[in-house]
Length: 398
Image 1 (tube, rainbow, N blue to C red):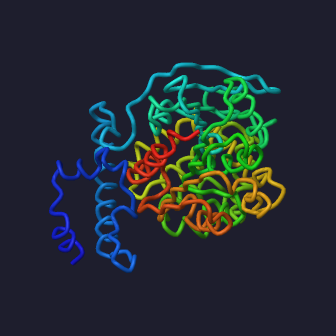
Image 2 (cartoon, rainbow, N blue to C red):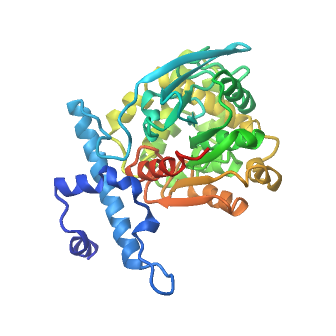
């Protein structure tokens, strides 16, 4: 019945039509823009449903396009709102304690500055992170946080805290002679972006956030301890679970931590890192990537070791925040109420569930929150469209 209604609304989507749904015109689309307002200002349920269905088809077609592109060597995101890959115009490092923190700059050297805050913690950046921004308008700064990406020492946990990263961002800002910058971050990147903005509110022009993660105990428990996401991805949870002996499964954070810190040897460390990372990779999208793709990327030791070790280190230490829920305490939010803030949140995000974005919106009603029919990944079609639309709106602001 729903399929019949879909065909009546948008026709049977052949290849050309699904490409149009996933085209760059999506940059200006949002759930609100698809809704039709009546004379009373009420949203049309038909309009909302039409967008929901189109968004779902676009997500499916984008996943298919990505898989096909991977085989042909084409750009898997050419039919999305992402900009073409800009060249890197500057690379550098800062030395701070035992760490060397790497950064790279893309786009217009005289453009509006933006700081890209990657996820994890421990995820690192890649050149494609610069594609969310108009390279003619933005000076795009990507920073590999301590212990990951091109920063060294590799996967190092010492001198690696939230507040260390906040200080690193400030040192890089000063080195690049940037007065203020937009701050853009998703998942753990949203956590660190909020922490940075609350410490340096006078240095932030706007916040663009995705997949809100407040690093509260209930969020950690939902995804890493069960029950929660394991009810939705039981077959993937089984692999995550089997990396830990039955007698330690009452606390996965603790059990994984012993292994990831190397207390049980290198073999157990790598096994745990891969299981931890693959669990997150398999649960990050509404339409799962093929198993081999996830295994190759998230199971690669160069990615998995810093990603799993540093994540677990931060979660074991409760994000190095003084209290649970610290980032949405009134005193903290009062510091950033003046900062224009746009949040994109996947309705079906099983890594950072929508409850966290909702709680942020209650504490911070000045922020705009958009829910998308997606999972967690920043590279799902509808999330890309909303994030790029936000950077477009903000690109001429000071």
